[in-house]
Length: 383
Image (cartoon, rainbow, N blue to C red; front, side, top):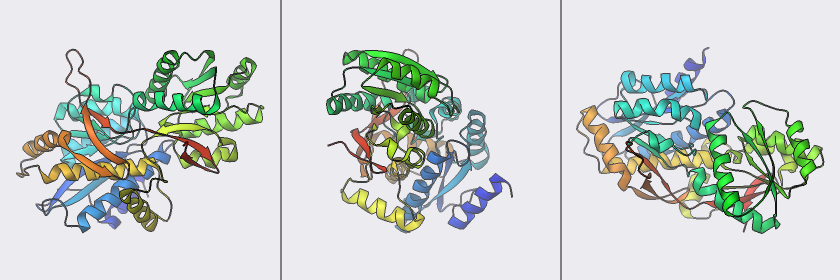
């Protein structure tokens, strides 16, 4: 059975069947990495969307219409994301698109949505520049530029850090953007860097870089990486006798970090918008519903996907749906910037991305970042 057929069967079983939407439905594309290295994020994201769609539809839908999701695997690859976006826009004729999973893929595929004047909504794209691709690009994932300076400041305070080493992926938009933000934050906070080391996507052996870092005796290692790479770095650092904390970004926030690094991940610090410890009613209800449906705890990426569909549903309540796809796409785009909601990740609204010469920008998340520390196999509040 092919991967596409497998995902098609999954959609049918959920009642989220692709095809032409009926008059009683509004259709959205969900492009996520369901296979490959980024699936640890993409599967959780898909689950968040599925849960939100089921809840919204069970409550009567939006304007009496059910939300239908067309779910496709973009494999965490730029070329696949482009192909899936084209399918959504021209064959499935969706009202809007969610995804893709990685910032690299978003930089490749989002321009197609903007050119076609279709809303593209990122729930896990945090690199700088995502919303520079056009006024049809939205995201509820807090950009690294908003999170990392806060994370660094709190880590310095927690561990009395005087100097750090830096380790980052130099061939990926997300990890390179994280490095750029960390570098600015380190300069602004006057924290010396003992050494800067790089790696490539897919690397599994980081002992050469870590050995160089160890010789410089830093107080912490600032790292811009995705979860699997970060976990291997942490584990190998401990094996080399490097006991200092790791300070990371959004990519660390996955159970995969603990699956690989185990207790070695303790004292790792990262920032993000969501915590399983948040006792607000919306979050408690989301966590309980997710566990009931999927038999496992959600993560930040599931929560952001869940909130994203709720944000769009809120905008649709005020969108005049005419049945004319072009007009309805424009109507959704016009209503989205006005949405203010309380979701699983807390209070949320959009802010217009800073203007750039000759570019009409999209909309970033306006949301508070929190700092977490790894303890006992999960991230808990640093406070």
